[in-house]
Image (tube, rainbow, N blue to C red; front, side, top):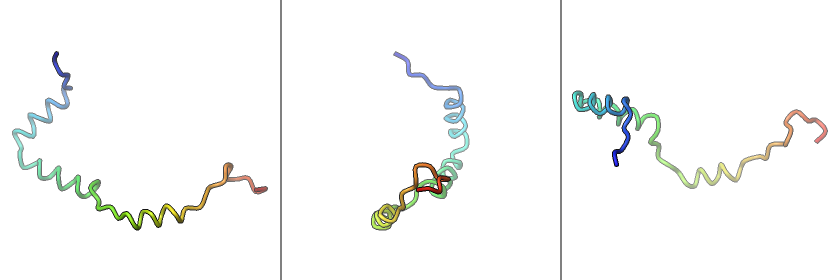
Length: 62
């Protein structure tokens, strides 16, 4: 059974094989935008300090 691979994936594999320096640029970009250190204590504090939102925000009677 053949595994499907899109044209875009094929193109990116070939392009990265021809431009290996771009792999490091990808890693830098991912670290900048996505890979952030997690602070469990700070996240727990934020979760505890949340204020519940009313069911209908603009209702002034509740």
